[in-house]
Image 1 (tube, rainbow, N blue to C red):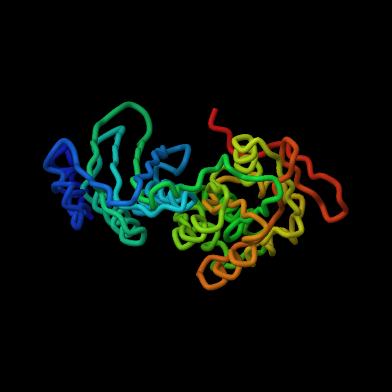
Image 2 (cartoon, rainbow, N blue to C red; image 1 turned 90 degrees about the vertical axis):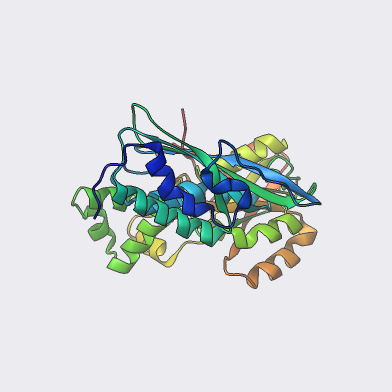
Length: 337
């Protein structure tokens, strides 16, 4: 391990420059700006979602996982817009100069992420500032002209779908925090195996943007957004922007096999799981006449989608039990302020 401290910006850039390979407009990070020309017939879609140590990850998390997450959370938003990423800008703010080993691992994680997501580093900046490590990424995507799917265009009667499974990352955070402290109380209480524990941790540390659903979202969804702050909180945002409400049937929500084990041990966790953040799944409103085609095409892909409710003509979001009563939430999702 190379513990040499990188004391100059040129040293940092030298570690990151290989990530621009394949992006001529990045100019090898040798200029103050990059250039990017949209393809004819396409719009650019932009997203900036910074992450910070102590809020979105722990300062001692593996640097490759930190890098992966920093890019993944931005790409997730593009997938929900029906877009695909083409490049990104990154601003790194360090509390102190990093070591060469830390930067190399961070760059390796970014390389893995951008290879998986199909984009390249285009430029950015580095500096030192008081406070925790902060990573600001602005991702640039593209979508056929006029086809970006907004979150404020859901229509009354639309069916609501969510990709993958919910709550795994929230439990992953709890288990990861415990492991850092050398404890395993929750793991033992829930009777989890090493594989199940690692699964939860991976959902928290390395979220998977649902890019394989971008085309489906663009073809079939009237509105969509990613679930990052909790299903109920994010669905409220969709409904508020659309001037609608929503009803969720709790019996339709799909859980991962590992989550099923936890829910059997502590069914009272249900409301906390639905309000947990870091899922990075896609929430989509689909017109009823498009449901069959949407579901059929989704079955051909690698990420399942599940109908969980509908858009209704009233304000607010209601989550209903099988007996028709409404579930109350003390906390609907992650609050930034």
